[in-house]
Amino acid sequence: MTTEADEQQAVEHVVTRLLERFPSLTEDHIHAIVDEEHHRFDGRPVRDFVPVLVERAARKRLATEAPVVRVDPDVAELAAADQVRRTGGAEADPMEVTRRSDAEGGDFLFGDLGGRAS
Image (cartoon, rainbow, N blue to C red):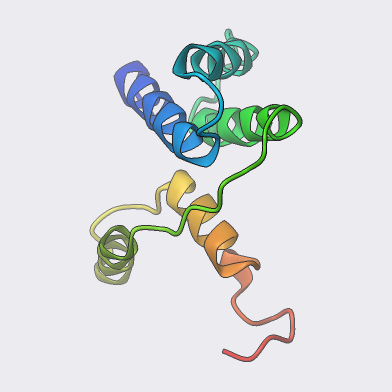
């Protein structure tokens, strides 16, 4: 279960990632969009995936305002997440699943079921 502090930290990471993807937009503007999207989930009981949903909605809105800069995932970050997943040390971070899926250009959760070579 996600705590309020964990959720707030994850949303701050969303802002950081969006600043990298939309360098032509101001930090204040990105914060405002993320805050609006985040407040859409106020009062909702299940909070585990709120940061993922906030990032997707904010990214979609921002993409209509400015060009997206392709950001390659941090190789060390991906390797650490794979290690945790393989060892069973913690459950998968939903934000990592989204980043991996975006980076691989496919569906991370279903591997090569889409017919792509592995």
